[in-house]
Amino acid sequence: MLNRDDLYEYLAGALDPLASTDGPSENDIVAPVAQGQEVWAAGVTYYRSRDARMEESKSAGGGDFYDRVYSAERPELFFKAPRGAWSGQTARVAIRTDASWSVPEPELTL
Image (cartoon, rainbow, N blue to C red):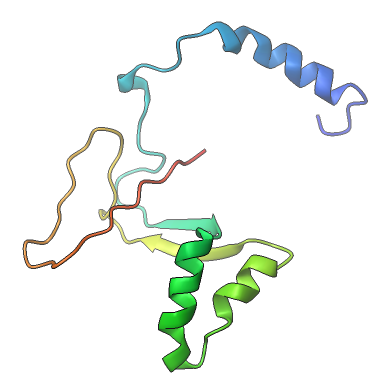
């Protein structure tokens, strides 16, 4: 498909019928992986988070690690969650009662 001379027009035509939909119902949105799978991701974090991670990693000798990830030719691959530590749309999540703070991090998976 990527070798098509008319790729843009082809994709625009294929997506056109989708533009008039109301979108998926809540029941159509499911977790992107099967139960029992660990989750790996590719990409970078927000600049503000990058700066915080750089500050935290200085004591371990990796202060510029996140800065290098941002300027890398390819995205970073990283472990996101172990088996069973993730949930799908509208699922309940567990937050430890002894946590002094928690930073939920929703993800969009395509």
